[in-house]
Length: 498
Image 1 (spheres, rainbow, N blue to C red):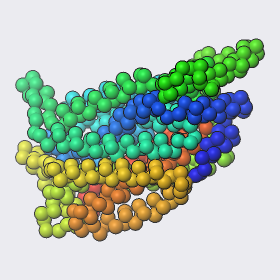
Image 2: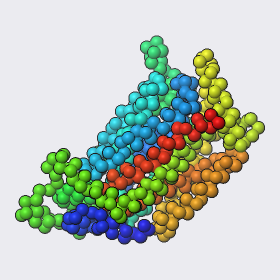
Image 3: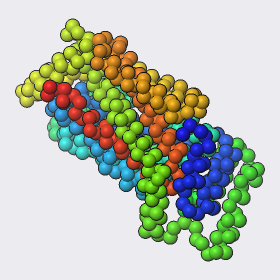
Image 4: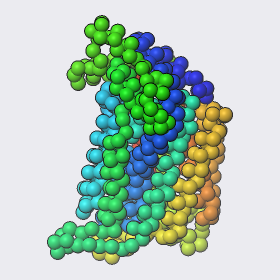
């Protein structure tokens, strides 16, 4: 899997029977290489950065809100776990269907649909007045984000030639830890205050966490604006035999990146002869109806359930299942754990399990006091926010290092090495006995598991052809999210019961 020529071989093996289309994919790669890396790719990566920050918001905004809103929403530990898991349930519900439709109808369309829906429900989260509305909105946030996530990754990869694709994919993955830093700082800026705005004689109240959600809802709106100026993938147009559109997009990329006129582009007349042949043979470009596109989509997905792609899919899904299970548990609960460590280190023991026991006992007391109107939340302090900035920074550095060595070491070898290290770090968490060791182990564990998740995404891009790439990515990510849902909402509740 580590060789740069593998993507071309995978395309040739698994692409549709039409050899012309297979050759056209290689010609797209050659044309992208001629376009180089320039202003267009910078715009693309900026758009991807803003898009992936939304994924961080969905994953870790709730944990920042939990300590602040537990009294306003009268949440116990089980309800906190359910609120954390709600977006992932939404992602599981829509991811595979969205992946199939993305391969049939295009990447850009579903990116815009997904982030428009995400904006609407993030705004509803900001206006929510009770737990049920908030949890329901979070479910739909996950549903719409999953609709847009796979095409976001796929679109970026399909604008990069094979020589830079792995590096760009890992660079794109580094946007997630940068997003963690941004969300931590924004949480620190807003949630450290105690705001309360009442309307209609107190019937409708905006608490600090409501304002926080409303501020975060601007991110998906910005994504829609940015991607409105990004074209559809030329490789997708090739799968529909829309060669004119693909050539036009490649020419525009060349002009934007090189600042040269179109007539200097080596591939300016790419596929012109093919168009003439199809006109003679009366072969229309594209599909004439939605039904034909869906039927073609079902035809295209057959190879993913046949050898050799089936075994590759099973292997990558298994790797992602365990990787994302560990990563999301660390990332989702770290803000809450940071608040616990900050507030309960005073009990005389820095053992993590001892502090968790003390917190769960006090949580039960707060739930009883909440019914008497005396609930006082355990707020995150400065130390907790700094810990989360450290976590995001360490994750970013790990991905930068991975991007520097991946072509030399190979994705498979790097993944194996990371797997051994993260196993040791996870086991060491049980014996963490100081604030410094807890933050260090969580940060390193989160960083390496995030790098592993990014490597599995790069494997999907490398192994699967364009016609089923989004579907494959969706299946792999769904398996990872199932792993997250199975434990994410219930780790601390189980701890509470024991």
